[in-house]
Length: 257
Image (tube, rainbow, N blue to C red; front, side, top):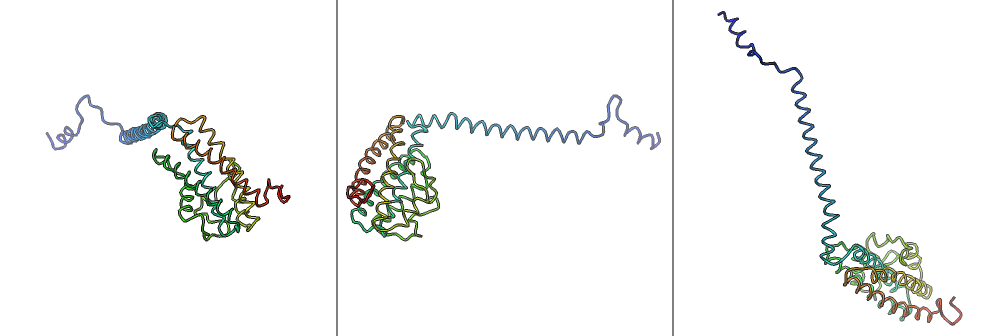
């Protein structure tokens, strides 16, 4: 056998075998990429399904075990925002009001509102629910002291960007423009504007409180709502009495309307 014949025999495929067609390697690569994509999509779908399971099953189950509902949590958040604005409004009084009775009432209402914020924040934190930023800012204002004049930019001693983000028109909440308008006043004009705003603001807070009392599930949240509703009605009467005494709406000296 010549060397040429030997080389031919060694390189000739055995009988019955079929050489790999050209293009096999690229096709194999495509199949591999498709399998990889399928695995990624399957993993993503698993994550989505797990999230839906958590939202649809585990969260309600946790709420049921803790005895509260979405409505309870929503009330707590809304009530915190509402009471936080009351704190911010009453914090305007030092440096603007010259009436001792108005100043004392502002401190009383502000501290009571801050107390409600603290109770509602405790309720949320005990259930691992975030506390609205406005609530934390209001508590910081109250800690600084609502009977002392705090430095501000002319629109009130409010801290943080969210303190100026009230949409207004909901449950008696004031808009930024309304708050800024009150903050621009002094003496009797300020007193009348502040107390009139507090009356409307407090009345607005009765709706979510009354809804929680009748529709809530958590016993503690319902008790907080009942306490708030009772306090609001008492505070409104005090504010109305002082408002009338200084010549605001409801007074009998002819200067109010």
